[in-house]
Image (cartoon, rainbow, N blue to C red; front, side, top):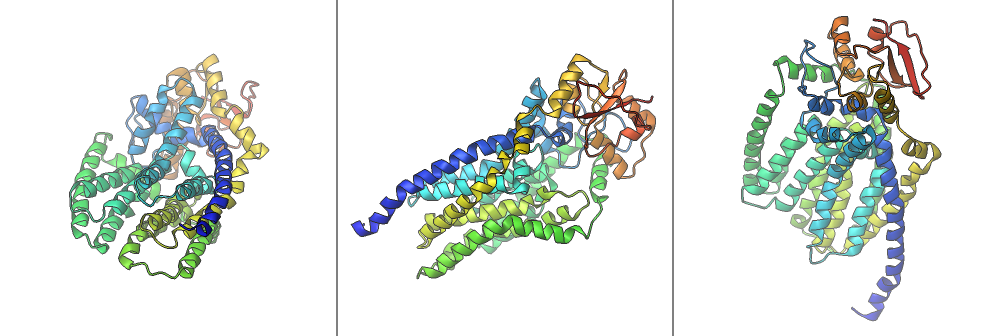
Amino acid sequence: MTPSKGLPKRLLRPFLIVFVLGAVTILAPMLWLQLLRGSKMVYNEMRGAPAVALAAGQRIYQGTEVAGPLFCVVYAPFTYWLYAPMVWFREPQSALLMGSSTALAFYISPLICILLRFRKEPRRLPASAAAMALLFFAFTLSSPALAYSSTYLHADGPMLGLAGLATLVLYFRHESMGWIPPLGCALLTVLAVGTKQTAIPMMLGVPVIAWYLGNGRFSIRYLMGVMIFGLAGAGGIVLLVQHPSDVALNIWILTRAEFQWIKVPVTLHVLHTTLLPLLFTGMAMTVAALAVPSRVPWREFRALLIFPAMALALLPGSLLGMFLAKGDQNALSPFVYFALLSVLMLVYGSVARGFPAANYWTAAALTAAGLLVPMAMEGLRPAALNEALQPGKSQIAFAYARQHPGQVYFPDHPLSQYLAEGRFYHSDWGVGNYLEARIPLAADAIWKYTPPRALYVAYPSAAPGYYLLPFLAPHRRLHPISELSGFDVYELER
């Protein structure tokens, strides 16, 4: 390298080091605050109720006949096994933080795999590795869909991580003629589907992409693996049910969700706004590729389209989930997550394959990450800081239930009540699932699995649901308790 060519790099290196260190200094505490905030959400207790039920000796799937406490089950069963270890902790804050950390660990596992693989590339560039890592975390923290999915106790984090790992196996080993890569890809896909049903399009997407890339043997062996592991998973589910109607009930609950046309333009606007940073990054990469006078063989480039193709395969399910009455922004996370991984793999592939535009693509990713870092600092707002640092509702419910066991029923806090009293009762969303599916519930079935000596029922103020309240306190007579700040406490009417 001539001195004139090496001079710009030497001048830019100190600025790059300062930029990376500054971004890490900002993003690391923002990620920790997001974890803390996720562990304080009442929502996490409701979604984690099946994991608590497993620890309490219950089966995951429930039938039309109420044979035990009801809890919210709308996803495939593997999710709840993953989160079950959190019940080993003695306090809800530690347990929920463990659950949020589990979700994050799965969520970032594809990035870790990408960076470990990148270290082995002969043409690796530290700037490119920094660009991929910073863009991943900055975009995650600035995107409501991904911030939600990555740190909440939900099926999204594990599903996204397992689906990303399956696609990485396809990317790196799509030319393999052996059995292990397609079977490994099949196992990861089945686990992803077993975590959340929205990963089902991958079962068709992987063999189609492998076939297009010219490896029909990979496709056939992958499908054989899906059949083997899928049947094994179905056999495992049989062990978790008491009657055939149990699984049908949970499918019926999902299909009863109402489609809302009014949410179509809102969803498209949210999706467009969320993807703007990646769209601008892609435009910059395209301009750089057109500006650099070079030819890249199609065979070298087409493997980089694996992740965009998978994102498109997951797009219809993402949109449909958002269109439903109770669809939230996390429904868009499969498509948005794979769009993010697509940009990372464009940087990876351009460097690993020696594309002339590799440096420009790295610069585009670094620029996008730098622009997103201030957006990720949204967690420093006073309201967000208070939410993350103040004691959560779970801790308040746990402390009261421990001091006054059996006196107050907390339907939105099944984990806290279980850790404090060692008993598992109906969760509010579990009852809500039955009511929304229009399955009648007798009053006796409700009272049978509530605290027998309880005098009051307490809900966090403005909490969603209140499904149990018409059964337990139809007249809604309030009875404020000073120790339960932030709760609406009602007298039970037996």
